[in-house]
Length: 431
Image (cartoon, rainbow, N blue to C red; front, side, top):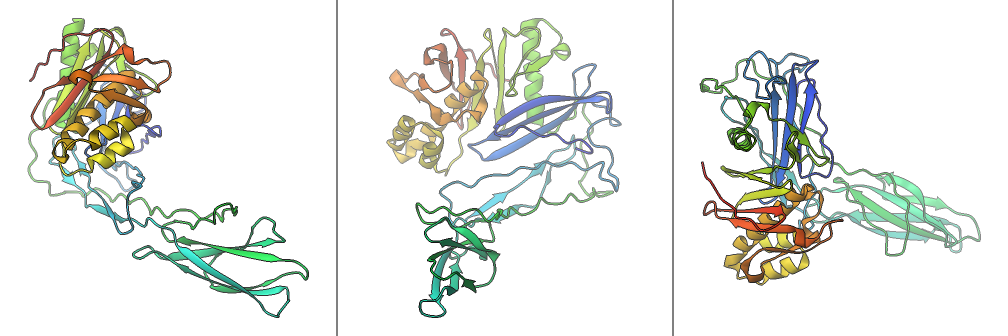
């Protein structure tokens, strides 16, 4: 953001943190980022917070991005990388769409980025022929072929082993198709060729054969460049500035509701409430850590959970259609949960998937680890139609500590809450 760079810790599905730039910028940078696996959506919320009031800065002369200059002081961007699903095939496409919401300006949609998958490494056929019968010099030929629709062969590395020893690199990342190997009389030689395609997929040696790497690197492309902001972009007529400008109205409404609800519990002005953040980014109250709370959003709805216990988690998901629910369950659910979902009629699998997912994510948020702890490492069961934590691999935790409740919010949504302690009555209030 301008001349500020924030590095979010790796292997986190959710992150929230405040970065104090009061001395140099006059504000606290708040970053809230997360991944919604169900909708395949990553979001980043960047806010400038007044260090004196704890509220969003509304002064147009202060904030995150100044007017752009040739040095790029008004540029802002996020970067990310993704891994492909194990079930993808060569030729499959991954499309990414980005939408930017800046204060009260109309949304700006970036051009879609489409990446074509090359899922398979090339294969190589190699022949070695003595130039003279019984001689020690060999003509070695190799032919590498990439899979149909692949990115094409980039190079081939050829190895040689002498007298049954280890394979060593002879021709590194060669673009040729043949070469002459000059051996020594009385020695025996074995050759191996491994190809790499233009996407970085490298052919593997046969089982039991060790070959040193040739330092090939996957071709992940390059990050898009950030063009200079237009002097007078045609964005239409923006609405008049509000008292609390925001990047995402849903975020702002949810956070305002959270502060308002907490202030009623604490009997404290909402603007004076201060948060602390755990090692995994989960917030808690600075002066009243015994009051638990959690915030979640999906689609056009947000949920705030508050309770008299420090560990509480809530999740809501919009139930998308036409998703490979059984395949997703095989990846993210425990084996018993996957078997249960697979046994449902196809018409019930969408409901079963989201019912399980919101319970699992509510537990992970209550514990405070998020999706850093694989959701396949614990099991939710619906014994007597009541969700129960059967087992968990999380250290120093026990299933008997936790309670769950499913929340009826809206017809196209599933929601659940998880808390540590005894059974309690859960009241739902809508605004």
